[in-house]
Length: 271
Ligand code: DGL
Image (cartoon, rainbow, N blue to C red):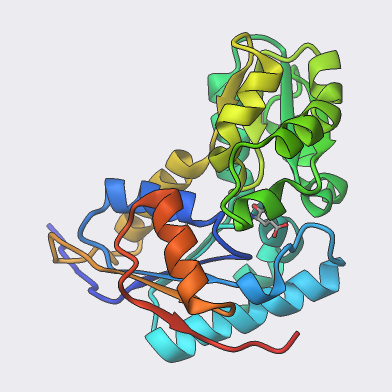
């Protein structure tokens, strides 16, 4: 049997804390892998920004992860960056790349309990049409209601996961999802699983909330196996880097996820 290993780290990035939901799923599934996470807190939110800007940020971050850490794979743990930049990233770099849209769509299709499903995401993700397009391709029988939920990301970045203001905003932005009478809702932004309690308070028990973090972790594992890149270690490490304030990243990151945030370092970016 051909047996190859590669102990280099896996690089993962997002605009801030959202991609940590994906980090957690990867760490649970592949505890031996070293994970390097870049949270672009200085430039969040990506959702309202034009495509060119998100593309530029994404390419800068990929260069940084490759040049500074020699990562063996990149996980674009951001739906907005995946919608706007994944094709270019795949074309430009010769290492395996995993984005969020395909795992997200697959998670939704396999969890759907009726023909009516929903997707929420940032303005960028929803207006790009990425989910609408892939769902039409892989599950044309589904009736998909999409809604952008601007403002959700900012609550997560402040570490504010439940509050009256958030509830009022959620009641307003999730109206189209309620009107669409959906049975399953894909949280099409990696920040949103942190808001699951509030979202489900608004939508009620009849709507199943779906995060794509686990499916993304399975895609990562499949590609690592396929490219003979699985580590030989049994226990990996986690290291976070932020373009924002290190202390705040450590404090909020720990409160959100409980991962070991002892190694958070800073990397400055141009705005
Ligand atoms: N968590 C990201 C996403 O999945 C980005 C959110 C943002 O910065 O607006 O879309």
